[in-house]
Amino acid sequence: MNPLYERFPWLLMARRNVSRTPVRSALAALGIVIGVLAIASLGVFGTTLQYSVTQNLGDVGNDVTVSPAADTGEQYLSDRDVRDIERAVTTETVVPVKQDRGVVTYGRQRTAVALYGIERPGRLFEARDGRIPSPLRSGVLVGSTLADSLDVHAGNSLSVDGKTYRVKAVLESQGGITALNPGSGLVVPPGAIDHAGYDQVVVRAESAATANASAQNIRERLNDRQERVNVFEYASLTSQISNVFGVVNTFLIGVGSISLVVAGVSILNVMLMSAVERRQEIGVLRAVGYQKRDVLVIMLAEAVLLGIVGGGVGVLLSMAAGLVINQVVLGDPLFTFSAANLGYFGAAFAFAFVTSLLSGLYPAWKAANRNPVEALRS
Image (cartoon, rainbow, N blue to C red; front, side):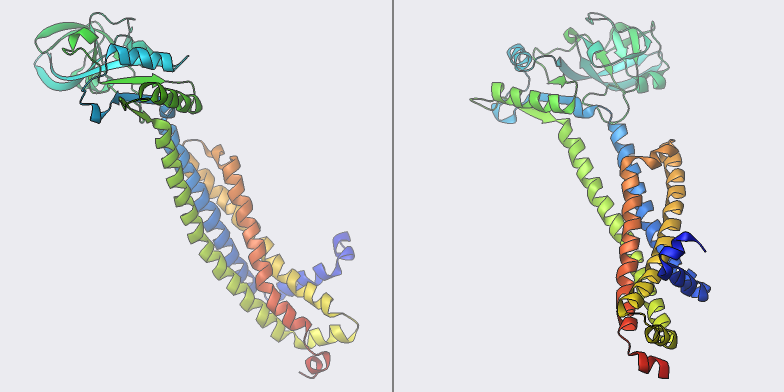
């Protein structure tokens, strides 16, 4: 005999009792499988979706934008404002930006585009074709989308509002959400835009925490007496997105939990039927010396056994589903075994175990408290 069964004979009895009605037991376990699969798979899907969106956001949480406050009546930030911003931060990159609209002519193609006047664009962007000069005093940088649309390359010449510029570089696609994305526009020397002030200043930090500290310093320095500027932290945007996905994940898991509760009711029904059908057997067990506690343990072991088997199969199927989901969405099936997803697998299995245990309590109690004489008579 198996040493485990020798040490725990009630476990052998529970296994045999479950195998007496294989179809009924299999259907009860199937309910657990479906519940665990629903909880774990929906949790994995929510985590994958959140990770995908967060990856698309890139390092946007490291950026802070500063613009003129509406109440001041000022349209632009002054050179003094830029100097104050530079004093408020330390190692962060500070990039003043002018903005305007213009008409680009290349060959027979004409299109209206956004213009960004930036002296040192290499601090924010990278070149896909050509080289970004620092500082940018002549020529233009073409956004990737606009370059593809016009079929423009580094070294070509184009016209902006009647003035001819040489293309110094085509910018790399930014992707996701960024504080400044000139994909469909042009980066020009600041002097090419005819106003003295700056529309905004982009502050790029090394991390979201540093960006938050920089934003606080800018507010304290520039808005100490009067609200001169508006400061927007992109880290707050990523935080809001994470909170939204947290709510979505909770909702998805709640939906999946309903199926596991239904499975618990199924186990309750199976155990009640088992207790009724085995009245004489329970009476014999009590007559030969089994205590109420022994009968209770045997009946509970049957319910828990169904939960363990169903939960184990459900977790394995959930992992297989997670591999498919992460391959399709992220192209990385191994993300299925990230810490967050392993937590969902563990939680789903634990929920299945607890549901089975609770579902077996009443039938086990009822069977254990049955009068042995009445049970034998029946």
